[in-house]
Amino acid sequence: MKNIKQLPLPILKADINKIKFLHVNGQYLFKERVLGNSNWKSFDIIKEYSSSPLLQKLPFITNWIKILKEHTNIKVIKNSYISILLEKSSIDWHVDSDNKDYNKSIITAISTTNSFIEFEDAKYSYKDGYSYLIRSGNSHRVLNLNDDIRITLCTTPEGDYHVNVAA
Image (cartoon, rainbow, N blue to C red):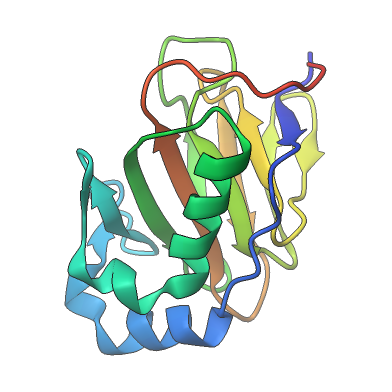
């Protein structure tokens, strides 16, 4: 069973240095994703339909969201966050939900060199700028073997959306 699929969405050309600057100088904005794992943090840029004022300082993300809304049937973003996994660290084996189908949240790789997501059947590497759906109801872990942080953007559109792609 395939646990990940790349989506035919616009490529996100992110300013990695700006995100790294925000991470270093705005540490208090980033919260642990899982209690007890200080290596994995995130910053909500959209939470329950409300945009953080800092989103305006990330025009590469606001422009990407605008393009999504103009060229797909994704019209409303419910949640979106920047996820940081520190260098040489991991997210242990876990299951995110009971749903064995693809999660509706879109993961967009920003800086994922020398890192991968591993399911029981295979390891998958993301290509920077590209977007993916994963079967997060299946046991998986994430390893960042890089000497630099791993950065992804997780975006959850409102309602059902359809992206024409084979499973």
